[in-house]
Amino acid sequence: MVKRIVVGAHYGLRDWLVQRVTAVVLVVFTLVLVGAVLLQPTVDYAGWRTIWSSGIVRFAALLAMISLLLHAWIGVRDIFMDYVKPTGVRLTLQILVILALVLYGAWSVQILWRA
Amino acid sequence: MTAAAKRRPKHLDLAKIRLPMPGFVSILHRVSGALMFLLVPLVLYLLDRSLASAESFAGMAAFVGHPLTKLVLLGLLWAFLHHLFAGIRFLLLDLHMGSDLAAARNSSAAVLVLSLILTVILGVKLW
Image 1 (cartoon, rainbow over the protein chains, first blue to last red):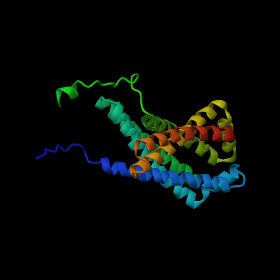
Image 2: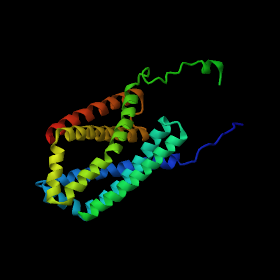
Image 3: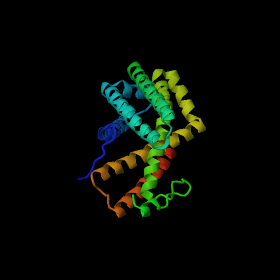
Image 4: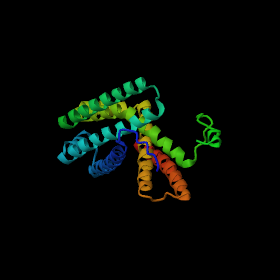
């Protein structure tokens, strides 16, 4: 009988899936945004503001931002897990990244709903 | 582990590692992702300034017009395009498309070339 040694916190598959779903969301948002810019006759301040004050773009942007935060977290965490060996340093860096990402999320909500 | 397996040479020295083309695309996927993570605050700052008021929009345009900012944004453009194309390639590989050696080599070369060419074209257009 093969002796299986099961290790890990079992978030591997979930994160693998999250990384792919968020990637697709970000590609779709990119296409929507590029399309919206190309449809605008002139991209001056008024035109730019029109794009971002539309409800669809606003919520699409929020969904994209949440996807970006999750995607960036998994990516950056994987980089740290591979290259930063001392646990204390890695933990500190990961906490800083989480705090930065949460801050970026709050900032983007402020930007989007003020426009 | 057998004795033979233990004697295998390990080349974890970064200066000695010669990556094949798909490996090169893979590590650049990481590099471009890390670069974009670092530039998130810049992008949010630019978006904030561009939407706050007509004056701040003009200020943002002047800031983006600076050669140094343009250079950083050009780097960001490459990172985005490389990450996008390499990411699509990885998704296709997940679906078992193009995973034989020849196809994987070709698609990795395509990702490298396409992202560089598009960076130059869009860079020239937007400059």
